[in-house]
Image (cartoon, rainbow, N blue to C red; front, side, top):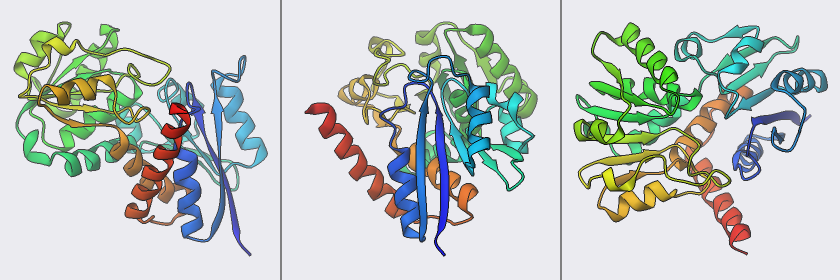
Length: 291
């Protein structure tokens, strides 16, 4: 009998997500009939994260992904949190067992790390300073991934500088005094950095803008963005035009999805097939948007 699996995504501004295409194709590859359901907080007015978590458990979901702005808030709603997700302070994947016991994980960390290695290689960051813009759920995972990659000092900027201070303090407690600093001035931070990562939603379709002024982005920098809707944000396009090495969010999306799929199903997916499925789904999405 063919196995059935129902999972989904909870977050805001997610109607252009490619996660359904990725998950359902990966299921097909291993003989599972899978369905991936989007639960958009912008569309479900009046429904809280807690409401949706109760609902998906009640109807038999085997798991959910969690995205902006819920990656930190969901921690309080779970029965168990993996050691890595607890260290990061954010969850983007939740599994449910047959008794509806919930366990939270973070696959963004491994997703960003693998994408960075593919796009840039470790030499670009090992022993160097980097600037992280955005200290929310995605930013926290990226911060730990940057330390996995060998960053020497991580500068942290956020429009909410109290949040930036909290992340910097957490990183110092884990990696040592002087390894992370909050910065209020992006230009000053970039003058000390080899590269920067945007881990805010600014630049996503529906949230227009550029998270740092392009005038302070020098050609010597590498620039990474976690956003993949669109595939290239104005930040990435502008940095490339200046001669920077750039990385969009596609690689992170695919690699975190591969790890999430393993957690949901127990199967290790074919990463090359997932990359092809992502590219095909992105092309279809972009054609619809352009049409």
